[in-house]
Structure formats: C-alpha cells, structure tokens
Length: 489
Image 1 (cartoon, rainbow, N blue to C red):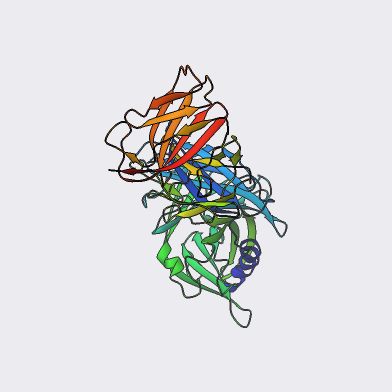
Image 2: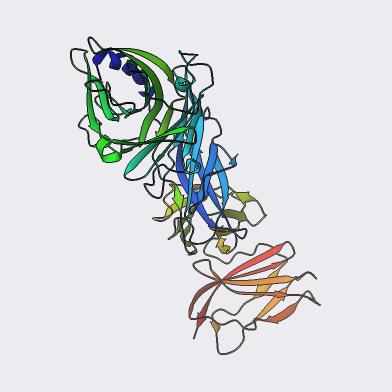
C-alpha cells in the first residue's frame, strides 16, 4: 500500500470515526421473572435529547429480535422480554444521533457465543443503511455500499457489508482493483491520528494485500501504514464478511487502553478504486463510498438465572424529621419490581434509591407526611412473592388512632393460655387484628367478622410467640389502634 492511498482514507475515517464516545444509556438493571415468564429490563437515558432507543434481544442460540422500549418516569426506560429459567438472555440498544453534522448510530455490540465464520447475520447487530446511488462512482454498483453489520466475541471482531451489486470483485483488470475496508478507531486513544482497518482486496505485490492494517500520520505529517495481522474473509449471500483477531487490534502499541473509559470503538466501512501505473507501480486512489458510521459500545448486557432468591429488606428506620429509609439487598441483583410505601390513609409515596448495585445492597428513602401514623412497605422482585413490612410511626407511648375504639390488651402476655383482648367502640364491620415483631414482620393475622356488639372480648386463637416485644394493630372500619406489648414465658 502506497502513501497516496492513505491520505483520502485517513481524512475520511478520522472525520467520521473520532467522534466523542459517550454512552447515551446507563444504570442497566433487571427484575426477576414475573408470573408471565417475563423479565423487566430498565436503564436511564443520560440526556433528554437522546431519542428513544431500539431494543433488541435474543434468547439462547436464537437470532436477534426487536422488542419495544417504553418511557417510564423521568429519564427511565423499560423493555420486557420473555424468559425461561436457565436461558441466557442477551439484549442491546441502538439509536441514531447527529455528531458535528454527521448522523451516526450509537449502539451496543452484538455479542456472539463462538467464533464461527462466517457468522449468521441474524446474530449480528445492524449498524445502518447507506442509500443507493450516493457513491462517488455511480456507475460502479459494487462500490456503492448499503447495509452494514458487526458482531464480537472475546477473541474476534466481525464486520459485514452489503453493496448494490451483491458481489465484491477485487480485480477489474491488470491495472484496476477494488478495495473494501472496515475502519476501526479507538476514540480515546492518545494517538488520535491512528486508524485501523480490515482490508479485503487482491494481493497486489508491494502495494497491498488482505489483512489488518494500522494507518497513521507521523510527526512530520507523513502518512504511515503497517500490516499488523491477518483477517478472515468470505463473500456469501450478497455480503462481504470480514473478521480479525481482537488481540492483534488491541495489542498494538498505539491502540490505547482497552477496555477504554466508554468501552466503545468507532466503525465505518469504505470502498475504493485503485488504478495502478505498471511502469512506476504508483497507485491512483479514488474513493467509492463510505457507510453509515457507528459508535459501538462493547457492554455485554445479559441475564441468566436458574431461579429466584427473594430480596432481603432490613434496617427500616424512621427519623424524627420525617425521613424514612430502609435497606434492599438481592442476591440475584434484581431490582424491586414492586417497591411501594403506603401510609395509613392509602397514599402511596415515591422512594429514591442511592444506587443500582442491588446485589451489594441499596438504601431507599422518602419523606413521610406529618399526619401519617403508620405505613406499609410492599416489596417484590418478581411481582409474585410480595413482602409486607408494617412501619409504626409513633412515640414511646401507645398510640390510639381513633378515640372511639379502645382495647384492653394484657401486658405482659403470658403464653400459658390463649390471649384475650377486650374491645370497646366496635363498629359492625370486620375487625382485622395483626401482630408484628420489631422488625416489622407480621407474625399473626386474623379477621373477626359478624361482630354483634360495641363491646366484645375476642380470643387470639392460634397466636404463639417467643418472649420479647411486639406490636399489636387492630383496624375496624376507619378506626385503627396500635399497642406495644411484651410476652413472657
């Protein structure tokens, strides 16, 4: 490959590919599997100007399918995928943004299960479409690019391109050749004048041969090039497949750190016509076309679980200034699909988490209204197994929420016999009695129907607990009463 060949390629690739790499999305999280055999996936857009992304997913060995992403509150989005225990669910996002007047795809890479070549296009990620007829050589359909795709594994990067002819001839005559390239750039590399390219072409001695190339400009602004590795190539189904070894790419001294901060690389494909003067072996290079460029984020977004372990709720605290907080930890890293705090008048309060590492644990908090006397926290990572934690917002004295309802509860209770509770002010409505330990866990629940009098003695049949402090709650119509009591054995 001669220097004159590098100049137009470098100008194009550096302008298109060295865009700022920022991920439009963050805080990816998942629920457990719900009753409909689905998993909820959520993430946050980093900017309100980022359009709603395409959502793609695949299960096991199947190909990618497009799902639906839905905007929730604020910058949060959600997508829902079907799921069966033990499967590997992979998912990714794609959107199109304008960077300095150039429309680009911002997207996740399609992660592959193996290094099979050529790969199944259905297991690759679509980068973008380049319209027909925009080639600088309008009479050469083989140089007029169309759709492009990419995929990756831990060992290899794959590039696929289509053109308007469905064929990729490399030799037109003894002096005329076609080149097909996929350029790759690390947007965070210190050597920002370096671009890498997989090149598919004929073997032209002393000029160029198929392979992975490093293209750059030295301190004197002279183009430089070096072949740093081999590629695999194949033309089938009207598409050109190319693949290079990841280690050849990231192992080059000028490539920069990998993974980089954004975990992203920039991609674009090109076509060129090379006319060779045999007397001097000097090439004349003409640009054919370049594809829709993409900023590819190499986050391997996946979910795989054999079953569900319920989350642990702990450290429920109510502070004097009306702030309530609690700790949520889930061994499987599931976010709470249900996370609702209802105060005693039925109002549901919004809660904020201090992070997204649910496996390590996060703290939720909210502000409780001054009129609240109690609240119930509902938590579930799957919408099936719902935990209820009752929070009593009282001082150190027993609190009677309704003066019309009174009860006499033995304190302490000795568990030698079934406890009896005497009520006054009962309405002829069901009476719900619940007893909780100091962690907010309900350990006894019973509903009394068919109340026949405003004053009745009711037996807590079936109640049995160890020695300690407990909370007694009774609800009759709109009246609620709370008592603290102890058990002595």
